[in-house]
Image: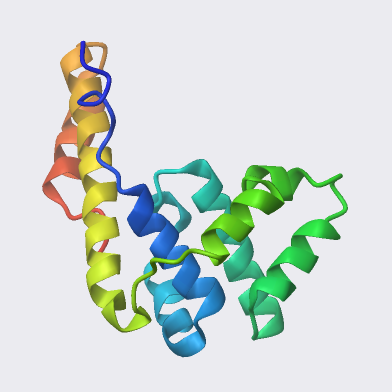
Length: 153
């Protein structure tokens, strides 16, 4: 088996670009936060960072790297959220990226990330169906799930 072809559809660089735009660039932050969900991200660290960024933005109506880092460092769960986000080094890797996209391409980034998430969802459903361990009523529900878009917009 080729491990590279066994990976689910994903684009970690796109995920990092989107997170960079959300945290560092205020121009379209609300657009990204309103049109994405944590499950659109493949990397669990990116899911956690997106979730924390959204919570801070909703609570503070502001967000930047210092607010995010301070919030993660003062977390009362002994830094559990910071570890889920990959740690301080990973956070600053995303924030200090030399190559990052433009928030003005947000609609394209969101579309591409959603498409990858939908392909992962469809693959998981296909694997469950192919496994043959699905009850008939569950099988019908899974087939219906395949026929509808994962996310509108």
